[in-house]
Length: 252
Image (cartoon, rainbow, N blue to C red; front, side, top):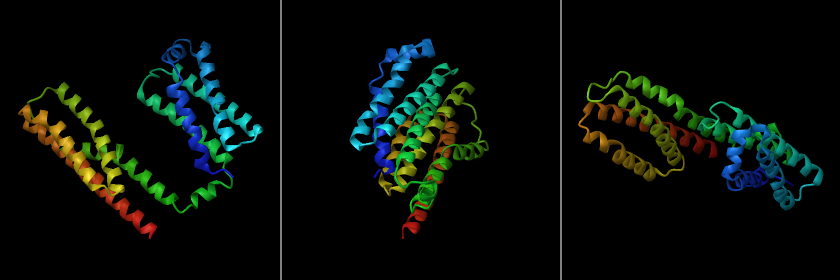
């Protein structure tokens, strides 16, 4: 009897080991330079397939299924890596994320297929499915949609003097990334009920974010960043609280 996570976790473990610990830097450079002509691309893909022999032996998976598993992972890994190294601007972080998501998706599909008694209906009807959807929805809301809302509100409060346009743009762009990280942390801590950790995040940001702004004597910039930060905190905290209440109601 195999359960989904009992299969997926060992697969992910081998993926991480092969992709990040057993792949020398020269392999990566060779794949970028030679693409499909690189022997390292084929060796790396084959390594991912062969490495799955470890969970195959541990889980006592039959050899016919193991052969299909190894072939599927090796071929899919080759195709995904080839796409990444041949893509324009393939070194960007977004391509790295897409690359890893695709690899994990393939492993998840295999684990889903191999798990006993697991179907789409059983997943949807599981008691925790709606809770999971609610949490994922909350994380999606606090990223781009919340940034758009905050940006729309901040347009009503333009920055006046004190800074050049180029430095303002850099600060706002950096603030967007800081806002993403801040909201993810606040939502996570709110969902697990660790409100003291939320206070720590706010205190840490206040020290590092506002210290330099206060030194610059640019009051409009300081107020601009403070408004954006407070909006970010209020929206995320309220959403986290609502989701937590919804999860409590469903559990009861």
